[in-house]
Image (cartoon, rainbow, N blue to C red):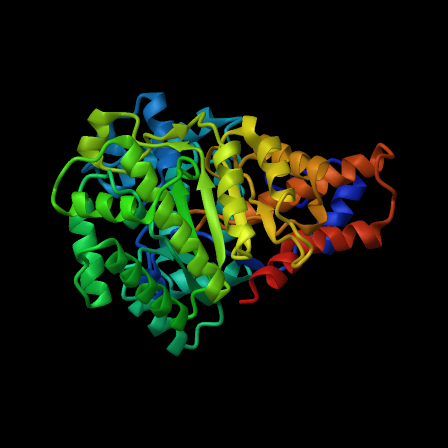
Length: 466
């Protein structure tokens, strides 16, 4: 009898891995503490018309693969029909073997639609029709998709100017999944970016004040932190190439901000001083409110200037950067810790060459006050695949305590991305099961099973206290 590609023991290579996954991990709820899902769609309980709407639109992982295969942009982000976009994706899928997209694609078809056929040119018409019929049902609305995967908490990511009206509506609803938010102030930090002054004006409107000085900016950000906190926010997030930490004086930073507001050009040193100052202010404020701060480090964004002009950011033109990370990150964390103002911190690393650097850095600031206070975040973006996850788990194990790890997240804009938690759990269980088989770990299922349960769910539950 032929076994489906996606089956009960997918990625589980021995009986120990199987026992760990099925008995200790599989049925644990999901706490997805960082993603980019649109809260409006959850609040309105949106129903998607077809797979392209819910699965392909907005997914730059798929877009990059299609472009690499030579698919015309018309069938990716262009004006082709939804069906034609899906058919072009389905033709691409067989060529994605050994890319995580191949595993994710078939896991998602299986978990949401009970479809176990391989997606290709032979099966695409059937799968298009079957999924279209299912998606038209209220059983496949946004909220139902989240409940299908046993999501307990979903934490979206919003700019400080966001009014959070959709989160407020969800609090008043009967939706069983907790939907929270994370404060993402990158646009207020990156002073050299195009449109910075326009953004500061919009921040002033959101904070109901004029922002004419650096003190005004800090006051406005604090007001928005208070607003987010009042609306249940307990996390923040920053997408930076690296941590900024230049020496600065208060008068320098005030002068730099005033210069920017006057429309004058800043040099790179001035920008770094300002970014350092505002980041320190923000992180000290997060500590005051007891938030968890997240730093996604290492991306080199918008590399293709021509396509960025045409399509804008977050459309598939980013890569891993090779920035120096250790010295500035150490100085930054140390500056906060020296004032006892270092809150719970998660550092996500995009360059695998820096895994051990980051894994040893977190140990410098785990001071015994909180279990796993400073975390090496899960493998993300280009690294959230089997090899990347394994390397992250190995670095964390070798340099710290994997038992304190808070586990996986989707970091996704797709409502069909949650099987990435399953994928991670299977990789974790197989890694431990293989070491039990080889005698590198004891055959103590009760204890190692507890470790798996903790990483899958319990540690995040304790850490975030949603």
